[in-house]
Amino acid sequence: MLAAFYRWLVQTGLADTTPMAAVRRPSRDETPRQTGLTRHELADWLNAAETAGGSLYPMACLLLLNGLRVSEVCGIDLDDLAEERWHHTVSIHGKGDKHATVPLAPRTRAAIAQAIDDRTDGPLLRNRWGNRMTRNNVATAVSTLAARAGIQRRMTPHTLRHAAITAALNAGAHLRDVQDFARHADPKTTMRYDRNRHSLDRHATYAIAQYIAGSE
Image: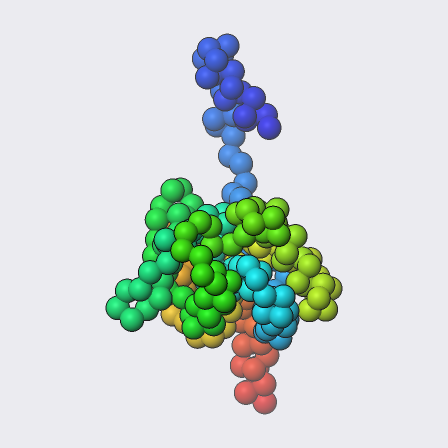
């Protein structure tokens, strides 16, 4: 806060320099801290969405199986769907106004086909009033489906993005492929997810104990 105040003084001409420029501040810890959902919880949540049907099912698939951000999911139109070299794809408008084309898993494609019915244009996902689903609509649907699936912990659209990236790593996907999947500009961002999921499993205490035990 203090640094921002001095920066404002400089920008408005009320001060020539900021004394905070020489202050060394601690680096920001950007390690993902969401509590990981289990494989069974993810399956139960997705099955609850399938049972609900309508726009909720493709919404769930796009959040979990594609790891899309909520704004990307809400912004998809029917004319963003296409086929490319035998892949069903969707074009999305990502973070920083970056466009990307991502493939759709068979389950996602089936969910989309069921939801769009005979429509040929307009938004892919619609709320109960027939309008484009909003971020709030999606957030509410995510928590509602969690309750139906018997999941006690709090779930948000970003929880699902985190879960998708972690699930890709747990499934054995190469770190570089997961970076492309998450569309992380910096590989260090993806590596933080990898370190976070193994922070206990890879702790050196196990290696030391095994090393010492081997000498007995």
